[in-house]
Length: 65
Image (cartoon, rainbow, N blue to C red; front, side):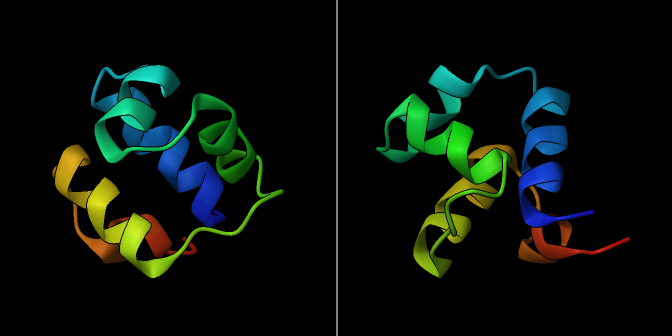
């Protein structure tokens, strides 16, 4: 899976909406939507912030399986 697909799965497993996760990491919901659709790249620093909110590892986010 792509980073966007992994992020969407992890977000849903955490019971968060796009708006809730975006607000938690300081970005707009539309930006998160673009990241989940793989139309906008995600920075390393934002990835780390998301893993903190989602209580997962960076590996969980970037794993291609």
